[in-house]
Image 1 (cartoon, helix red, strand yellow):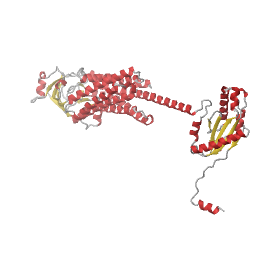
Image 2: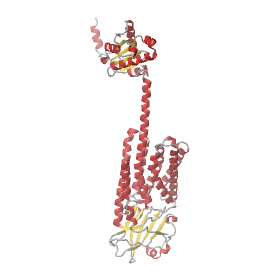
Image 3: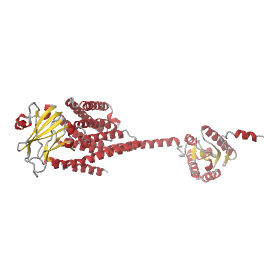
Length: 574
């Protein structure tokens, strides 16, 4: 299974290999220069005055608002010039966007959409792909007009000029990758939910919740939900993307606490887990409820929460290593890659590194791999817990057997016999067996040989008893047998077997038996039955030993007669 999982992960990476060439070999990323929209601006005038744009600073330095983004001169793509071209760029929070395309003949064509009408241009990978209007000359420059841009990390990111057919081919490859990832995640969730009623491990529902948020994040961040629900506003998709990613972070804190042994979270780390949960929950809830109002400070608070989470997870790994956790390797393998890639996301969010398309895609891919690898960790965790539970039950059974068993003969002791006897249905036969002249054996051969006689006597009893008969040593040399009255061992056969058994030093050992039959519905019945059998045993000893005596059968109550029964007895009475 381990090699099958490795092959599956390798297949996912191989499926991703066509993605980079499909965009990279069509030219470098189109740089975008920014300018806030001002009254009187027109696309024609701005195309003629590119010096009015800021190309030196990062787009996000301008904050939220309405902006023009002017591209570098467009490259000439190899291939058939009649192929339709498209410009692709990352989907960001914007209310309305218009692309003004300048062609070599000086004409300008426009393509406009709003946040509510983004679906026709949204491809997998959360990429906007806008086909350029056909013209007799080639496009030379693009001017984006963005209204209501949150500009948290740029207005236009990762723009490429590509053949439209190539963009669709990339989407086909991505659809296979996302299908594999979500199929794995959903399958793992169903599998764990199916096992939970049987195993009842608290880790399982937490893990299923984690898989739920990973699936939600995959649907939102990939743009797939926008294709499934074309009426969904693209800005709302970004909101749900943030909610699902926050859910992954929050559930991960709970998952870590349930995954590791309790000793890993002893002391300050347990309190830090609560602080981490709060620092993630509050900003994410505020972002979900208030965006786009105060969207940039809220986004910063969310990023800080994720930074705290990363530090917390590293502290968990260190604590697990110091306390020699059995589950450290599984957690480190499963979450190592997502943690590292999340660091890149945080660094980009803090504007310490530039955005790259692989950051978003690899994060999602690593979450899919994590779901698969973490499932092995969960399975291993459950396996160890189940093994500990089975060992505890085995120890409990062994302890119970020790408490119920006579250590010398291996038969039940008096207490265990009583527990087993009371409540048996139907008439029962109790046989009390006492070894004749056992004190003389101990005095002659010693207590060690006497113990051997007791063991041999117990074995002779066991070899003679029919199935379902209880056998116990209830005193020094006194034994008790209990069986259904209809299947009780024959007293004479039992005496003969005890006489012919092999004992130490060639001893000839005999026994006296006292027998009585009756019901055993409660302890009072047991005391009555035992008293009668004990009196029969004394009678056997007083009668010369090596014999069996029966006590009178105890009265077995009959069901009450019908109402007319008293009248019948009355007429029958002389």
